[in-house]
Image (cartoon, rainbow, N blue to C red; front, top):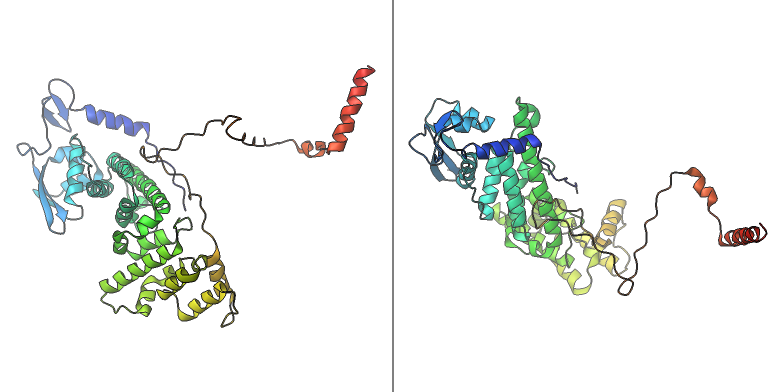
Length: 401
């Protein structure tokens, strides 16, 4: 698991943010991206001064939004490229209308409304595609507050394509393809916020593995998203049977989606190497029989598992590959988390350091050894007898001195 560091905002970004929030706050007339406005002017949803219309939404759920060319063209190179077209109506059919609305609210200095997981996810997607790093930060922090097993599944369902460190191609142009340095920096910042959120989501799934694997939303994941979860060595399931049953449900749903017969062979073909993720040899008795009864493994592989579990001779010669699988299936899962979460909200805030326990209630922790950089220190190490005679000699010297 890649440990993601917390993406820090630069001073220049904070100055731009504070300047942007104060542009409409002074008294009298102010100039906002070339428009002369009074102190009470609000351009958001303003039809009088608008000179462009956006029709945004996907899957037929489209809404109409009035806009202002000079205001939005100055916010990002993506808006500048869109508004360079000689048209009065621009169709944005690759962003959910809820996310596009929050993007406009942010650029027009209106309060964003990230009250639900769906709206925050859509706003994060819009912020990434329009290179709005501050809004991406706001969405990532809000989603981190609401993280649980179900929310983590929803986030990973769409977030993988927005991350730079997770498998999957990014939906925005790669960094070398952007000629503008500011645009490249904005894209990198958006990717870092997405990486941090995905990192925390995977840690939540590790900790709440049973709840995630029994959630019906798991069956809606793509193969790549499912692999991100079930391949993790730090997935802390209460029983490997939970993981095997979750894979069986997902394989059944995959066969139904692709209009295939619900046969064991088709389910194994849908799972591929993911069928080897449960650690079958950590099960025994009835639980092992139930896991093998799901027929996620080939018949010969099931026979090898039964022989190893019951300490019988293998029905066929065991090669190096099969022996490696059997050893992996018998290896206990680690109980420690993969890494510390990135501090995005109060939910992921690091735990306070433990105070020194008293002598009455607990043992004093061992003092860590200090590193020594003197090569002669090894020669000074003596046994207990040598230390005794050395001390006795020093005592005689002090008496007769």
